[in-house]
Length: 263
Image (cartoon, rainbow, N blue to C red; front, side):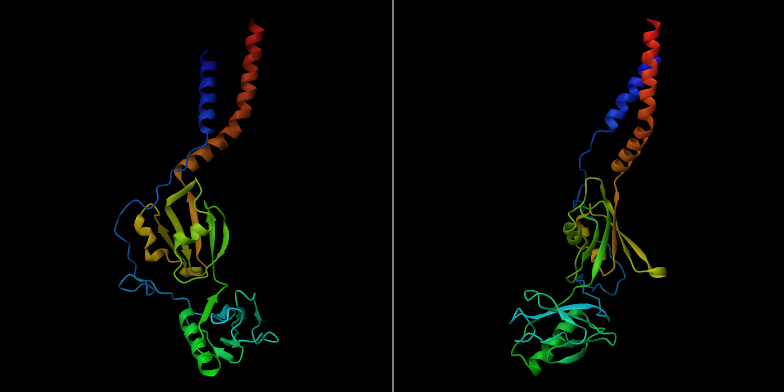
């Protein structure tokens, strides 16, 4: 009888462990002091400025908001310089050449490498105002920038980094949010390459993580959301069940045969 009671207890434990668990993240509740870091991209007043500088082979999407189709009033007859493309509603796309310049309609090659997006926008706008267009309003996006998300998010993979100062919260939202198994207290941002690689841990249970300057994303960042303890424990129990259940079936069958043979 003791053996049967033991087997019954194990069966109950397996049943309980196989049950699903509720999502138990607690987001944006704690009110700890905001972390500060010695980063040149963070101003003393807490405002973060974009530090990405345009590089050769970057892809720029440029349009004049006075005419949403093209930079100038007429359609370019053929791709110029680094190449032009894109839909009319989005404007044209241009690749920055190896020499750091971008070939633009009516302007020719404009040196642009090393400038931030805002600086490049103002330069191109000023040149068009001087040479061709009346009161142009230039919109410039760097469309090849991206971050990579892994782990417990709705949709893993690469996501474009289209605007300045995109936050971790915004990017996770674009990825479908956290899964039920996510550990919201330890979201890692892996930045840099080689010996310069850094890992920043963000606690999304802290409301100050929304404005934490360390959570402003940069091109090439890798975001990893690990499993919470409950999910890890459940996975281990499920793996244990996979091994134990066949043995229990064999043992139960043997006990049944033994019991019947004694009757």
